[in-house]
Length: 383
Ligand code: PMP
Image (cartoon, rainbow, N blue to C red; front, side, top):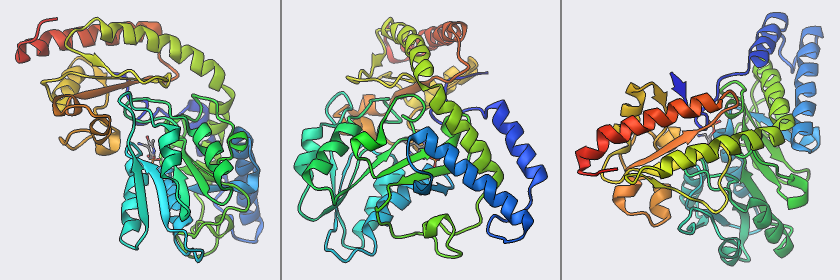
């Protein structure tokens, strides 16, 4: 099978698997225990925190380990709004965020918090001017993702954070960095980003581990109460072995970012040329595309039909984001971009990974050609 669904999850890097197995075998201590076993686990945990901090260019005390980016996003959004006493009850976000951000906002609305959802432009990019225009006196948080997980549109997250901070240093800025980290450079300090979510399984780490960068001084209300782990922001015994493995994956991702960007960009350009050859397909063309995502629609057909045809031909891809893949509803992201229903129900995402080669792009292109040949006549279309 050819896996072109790396934006959903990546294979775990062999060194990471080895590391996790070694830690699991050698360390059974709880990092909060004060005996030798606990201390050894605690050292590993703190060393991992340093490794992650270095990968992000921040301080180790600013890293909170979580169960993944869904939790990181929940902690950033709800944590920034709950328990405030300063009357700041407004969030600015966009219509194209991952559901872990948008559903967190929706939940908060039940508690009297208001959210402004800024629409994207037709190419899937959010305008910094529109985000800034939505900021109010009572805004507590601005949350804009770095790379959209469906279309691959790179968002001006750094510019938005910088301008929000210029407007008021008290507004917290959050960036969901899941699809950008390890693929695009982003200087959290220069941009004035306060909160930044990443997930290990999108860059060669294990599923079920993520982190939230919380800038020193940024106050969050913890969502999990208990033993006060993770600086009091996330109670619960840490998953030490997986965290050590995730730290290795984050380090490898950060170290290889520039090279990965160039390689993926080259492969992406080839793939884009292939998609463009087919009249039946409409390539989604963001102004700034992420190097690992190619998105197109096949109007007249349902995403699932295209996806399963590709699967029969040996290729795994996604329709919408993996988290909303099981729905037949039109894509929320494409609808927000103003795409008509026949486009919003027929999106397909190819996403590239580290191990892909030109030969695999060629095989994918062949499978795409056969898919179009097979399905286009169904809709009375000719290439
Ligand atoms: N944000 C984005 C942009 C994502 O692509 C994903 C994964 N689909 C998440 C958040 C959630 O990450 P996790 O799977 O680690 O919960």
